[in-house]
Image (tube, rainbow, N blue to C red):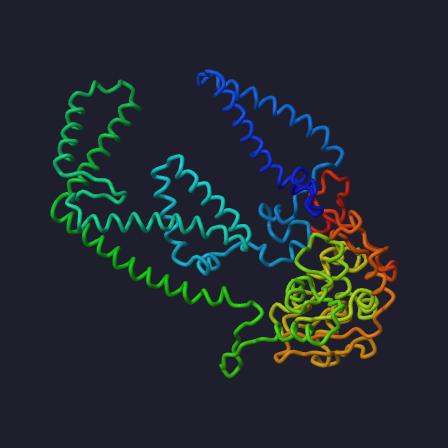
Length: 539
């Protein structure tokens, strides 16, 4: 059923990322077939093992033949750069679009503590306790814990994966320590141990007597020096353990254990109360809208910055319903959902070339950027106000644009280092200074920066200057009507909702200069761009 959806298609049987889970699924089906055959026949364990071996060997042979036949034809899809970023440095995946996403950077200890708090300390203890009692069920926790930590450590956005297993392991550690602490006070067994086990003194003494009896009945030590030394070390450890158990069984040992248990209970109460308070304090920050944030003015006054929502509502209330908004893809979903307006790009960044065209429009010269924008959009929305605004991100925009439009940055500069700030005071490079984004971002704010009033009209500026909206003057109505015409849409079947659009003819000259981006992972499509990748990694 899923392959009938156009955007899914045969991807589950082509993508290298999905073929692994598909193979596991097929493996379980083979096991079920073997169990079915076993139910029909009387089979011993050895016979069942041989049957499974034959079935899996046959399936493996068929799979190898299929792979060898289909791989040269480019049937299998590449591994995405996002998956590749889990195993290499996040800024060196070979894809500038993936490298630009801040959430792909490795997680820090501060990030773990921010989202997990005391679970960071308890989970490793629970992991060690589970390791001490490995079973079929507990091994699942170990594998889950290791996998979640590995991937979250590689990519900060995946810390979310550690929450369930961290809670489980932390609960195991806290529960066992709490159980041991209570047993020291309410259990008549004075020899309770941390894992909940224990026995009375008489049983320990009898066990010691048995051990001594066993020692007395032991055969002679082997003549080998190595075996003799090993036996002596084992005996010394047994003696040390017996002495330690004996010390804990005394009244002083019981008092020490009760003191330690009381300390653990007190510490658990304090840390538990602190953890609960932290959770309640963090909850509003995580549940509140991210477009409404708190800030502090220079005089110390705390304010709510509502600029983003105000801008989106202004678009909704003051622009025609068929308006098209040009903004960087980070805000695409917000514009669509809150403003109910069409945006040029959003978080669905599978079309690398389209994102590159948007990046080129914003980071190229004002004249060329205008010629692109007037064929695509009616308004341009810019995030300003410092911090992580559009100008701070702009070097990434230029780098992405250059991955498709190779003449965007100077020759021999694939990472577009010529676009950016030249010092810590925020002085722009010549390429940045003449860019469309810099002009709109600093229009009549920075000294000497003015956007062409014949091309752009500022129609909205938020209260704290975080968002600015410009109306594009001289929009190409011909291009707008051409794009809106259903006859110019490429639908998979007549009347389908899956209709990828086309660029208007007015952009033909610019699109003729593009070169489709080929990832390192496109090894089976014959599209490798070795020279670009080599320069990209060397910079």
